[in-house]
Length: 214
Image 1 (cartoon, helix red, strand yellow):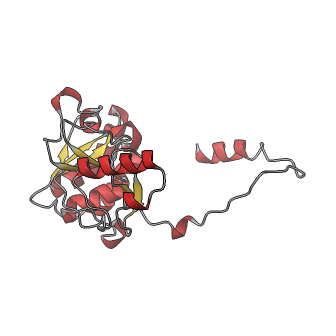
Image 2: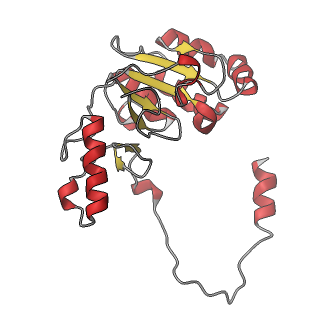
Image 3: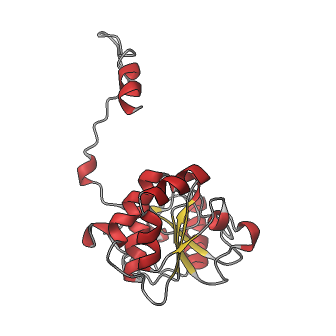
């Protein structure tokens, strides 16, 4: 399907004489894995970066928003995000519960164990994904590592069906929102990739997946 899509996209080139306001080239090999520190998907830093200081923000509205987010998340500006203690890890949701996502996470946890203080769940994004993962033996990889292999659905992404992060506890989640109370009242949510979530489950703290490797 990728080859078919690529062939179709190549039928839509820009005109040779097309003019653009700007052309931007990004070397993604220089971008470190990203994780959120606050209560909005825009509150994001690289895993090797420090939590931003609201005092450096010129816009008073954004400064107040950052202050409120740090207070809710229980974090201090200037501290490194890596190494922050984790209570829960949630891998799944419609955003990052594809078979490719589960393969990435399984590659990190294979042969390892979830930290004793971490509750770790895997929730496939659909029944089709769940069956495909089981056919590849990924369910066994996660169970052997200490993850709960759950039924597909929304689950902890938005605290559905009572599946919540307890009050005051910290979660690394592959879901798509980290608003106040998203995963439960007073739950603190960090959005991350499946690989980073898996690495954090093993380490017991927010961890760089590149330091764990497959």
